[in-house]
Image 1 (cartoon, helix red, strand yellow):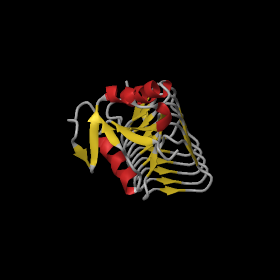
Image 2 (cartoon, rainbow, N blue to C red):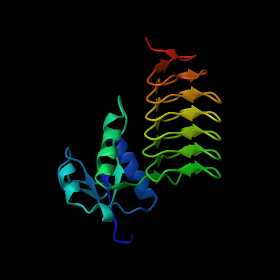
Image 3 (cartoon, helix red, strand yellow):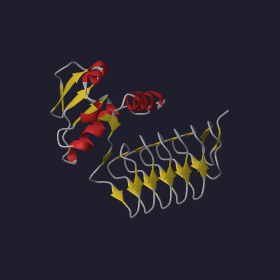
Image 4 (cartoon, rainbow, N blue to C red):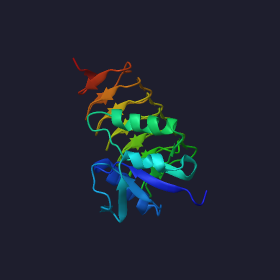
Length: 211
């Protein structure tokens, strides 16, 4: 719809990366929603229009939202924001940075965010509200469920399954065919050689459950 407007929610570190990716792809962003930044402040030329209350004045049929919350320490706020405004009738849009490489027959949800330098090989499936961050490498036939976050420099080998809400830390390596359960945390630099049960945190090389 030509008169649909797009607003970014939250513009901290991750939000600025998302905004930069959108603008570099020649996307028009009509404003930033962030209660912690003064109204009228410009970020990369886009003005802050207010806090969350301003969204209530928007028509969900004429508005797209972009999730600017990151996952430092926890993805809770990111997931809550997506679910809250989705239930209110709003649709979220994502971004694929122009410097990302996307293989054949990939399925990428509309709200997913694929950052600069990320590589997705063929037949990768990416769910809603997923982040695949800077220079992450995702090989063939990987399935990444809703709300998962793949941090910068992570390497996901072929046919891996990443569960709902899972977090894969920076520089982690997951070998082929592994299943990562829902809400797992894979520590930065971990090398995962065995399946990881839901809601488990693993660290180290080889990765082991954090006691």
